Image 1: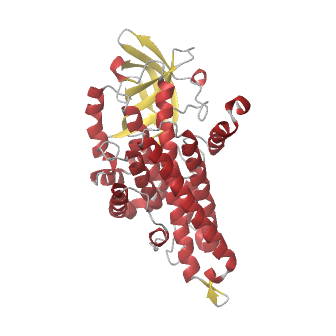
Image 2: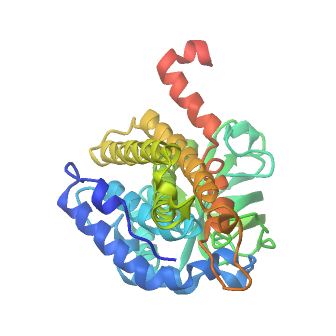
Amino acid sequence: MTVPRTQDRMTHDIFLPEETIALRQRARAAVATHLAPVAREIGAREESADSFPWQAFRGLASEGLFAVPFEGVEHPMLGVCTVAEEIAYESSSMAGVYDGQCILVPATLAFAQPALRDRLVPDLVSGEQAFAFATTEPETSSDLTASRLQTWAEETPDGFVVNGRKRWITNSVVAGWVSILVRAGRDGDRAHMLLIDLSSPGVRIGTPDLKMGHRGQITADIILEDVHVPRENLLGEQGRGMAVALTALVRGRIGIGAAGVGVAQAALDLAVHRLQTREVFGRPLGAMQHWQFVMAHRATEIECARSLYQKAAMLLDRGDQTAEPEAAMAKAYGTRLANDLVREAIQVHGALGFSRQVGETGESVRLEEMYRDAKILEIFEGANELQQWIVARRLIGRDITG
């Protein structure tokens, strides 16, 4: 169901660059053309290698949205986050796909040797090939201490041999390449970031995970058995892979914060429309002061969450690589808000909000899908508890917080 956007009459982008305002309009039009017609199918179908949303993926790429990190704009991070918000408004899981393809992987490709980067970027930008980013393992996720990694790389005269397993890896079932964090030696205390061709001998992709939500963001294990990686595929300096990974993750957290804003905005718009059109006791549901105050509070929070991710992105675009507290705030605040607002939008809609579809009439407001999708936003790219700890360390001091 399409409802009016409250953002268009409530938000004034007085601080945004003109290029970003124009990009938002371009992204919104691309989403309406290529994603909206298939978004509900993407959100409902079970994960499999065959169900990867290539149609929407390549459609968005065809409109230039995958080129934003590379096209020489003044504010590329702000640009990709703005696109992520617009995609998430229609499909949170596709925003997760976009985050991997256009935020995490490009951040690591910045550390690649120029010849390799120049060879791969055209396929990424065109959507011809999907890319993956892999740090998480079965026994480590938010804690990426090198000594906890069980995927390791032994150095050879011409590169590395990699063994191990990565888990919950977005796009892995269809990706051609993966940026992967590995331990430097089986018992080392440092890490490398490598770029691995997933068609290499010894690479196996596991069965797709069956998840509660984000079904368009298909994940699966990557298993590596004696996989040879050429030395030129090292990203950044040897033994400094954690720095490369964290550079990407800080950016990814801002992107997920932006996605949270997109989900929250969609939920608010659905709730407001229902409050305007549903009558109870002879008057619109929106005449009840309770819901007036709740929605006013949530609209204020969306404005705060949007400003947070925009500020964090702007800091990175200006060359400030210490935007960690702002990134953590943006991620935790935006994703918590998404969950709160979807839950309240369901309450406003009552049984209709709880239903996937009304059997007799076919009515659906997609809130069931949004509720399933929203929860993962608080978990991946660093759980929100970790984000609070990051803020607390800067606020109180690492000597006290640890």
